[in-house]
Image 1 (cartoon, helix red, strand yellow):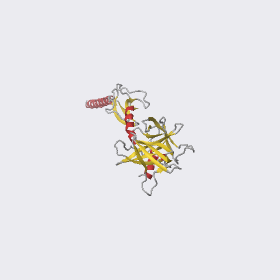
Image 2 (cartoon, helix red, strand yellow; image 1 turned 60 degrees about the horizontal axis):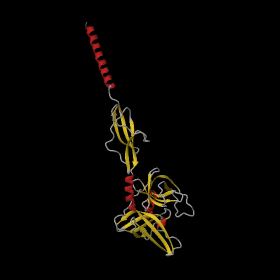
Image 3 (cartoon, one colour; image 1 turned 180 degrees about the vertical axis):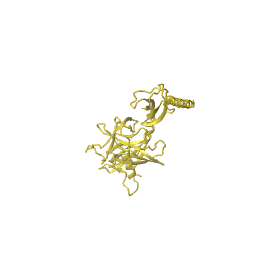
Length: 314
């Protein structure tokens, strides 16, 4: 009888253990499956959520932003072929991509402001009124200090041409007002900042108004594929992108400088304008552009402008 009770107790213990295991297994099997939903904006994780299978995910409370762009929504792929339906139950881990579109209204406002950084420069070289050559070009104000504006421009904006005894440089603002322009020299021991190796010069002029202002400028070059915006002094604007960095094949008869570094090539070509000021999407200066007769648009890039300024100006 004693053995019977012992066997009965052992059997009861086994039933208890196996019963607990079945309960544990049941609990494990009923745990919900979860998935990750990752929101990607401009190649970076904007937000990440963990969602139980069968539930829906809500979009981020705050939409992502991109300078001078409109946010169009979250898409299921990087090619933006399918807008994601947020009423769809989540059954697997997914990545959603933010799509943007250029905001033309914001760009127009930015361009209107950027015009206040651009001036027209007239370089008149002469022996007499009947014996003169006038060169028109553009400049962009990068420093305004007190009553003086300091302006980046191509070499020929202030370089005196051979065979002429006299020279007169005039700067015109966006309203057509004129000012006497001067070539900049850091000190009496330094050369005038007209440097053919960079095809850049510095012109300063005295200005008493409040409309003109200094442009923001990049010190490093934009990437190939980045948006480029070209402006001139005639209210013209063109949009394009950075296409390459390579040497420009100078025509021997047209060569006006000794530039031997890679220049920035872009597709923001202004019709009827050989020169323009090149900006990025935030209207920071990234280049000073020249357009050839065949429509090739190249610019002295931001990094070389930065070098020029620190060698000969600052």
